[in-house]
Amino acid sequence: MFDIILLERPKEDEAKMKNKVSSSHTAGNVKKRPWSWDQYLDEEKAVAAPLRAFSELQSFPQNRNGFKVGMLLEGIDPLHPSKFCVLSVVEVIGYRLRLHFDGYPECYDFWVNADSSDIRPAGWCEMTGRKLQPPKGYKEDEFNWAKYQEACSTQAAPKNLFKNQNRTVTSPKFEVGMKLEAVDRKNPCLVCVASVADVIDDRFLVHFDNWDDTYDYW
Ligand code: MLZ
Image (tube, rainbow, N blue to C red):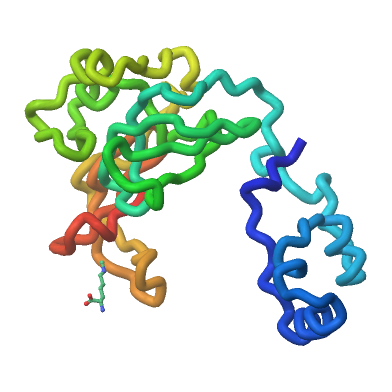
């Protein structure tokens, strides 16, 4: 049920590691040992936080995930959140998708839930008047979704798979251009003068006045 494949195991306790290495002949054996929650809780003599302690939003979604490997879409770059980029689905596990920036190295790939507000169907940026970062090697004004799909012989993810569209916002309180004070996430000890740079559904993009957009966040 839980996709533990994405879970990073705890850093090995060095004292414990030494014992294990000396009692098993090769260090290699220790490293490859599969990691399991049950065994870890047992070793640590600890208990897992019970499911009932988590809110519904934090629970594992049961919905079906219709995204398939190869499908193309648009989405927010988690390392540069003011940018929408051309992405393709490269892996699907349960409700999660691994997304790849077309033309860029795999090290930038990232995971999202299938209902993430950070992903949008192909053509969404054009329709909503936003700038789309094309795949590597393409110029912004040259990129065209129809031609690109044809050139890659791949299809854009169908619109009905995006469960995040048009979240009802009763009365949007923040408007583009409004000023506010916001924590700089890259330097969290700083609270800085900022502006609302974009609004999508129930979220807005914080931009720090006179700083470049690498500090922006939703
Ligand atoms: N010491 C850093 C602070 C940057 C703060 C930016 N806030 C939006 C620098 O001067 O680069």
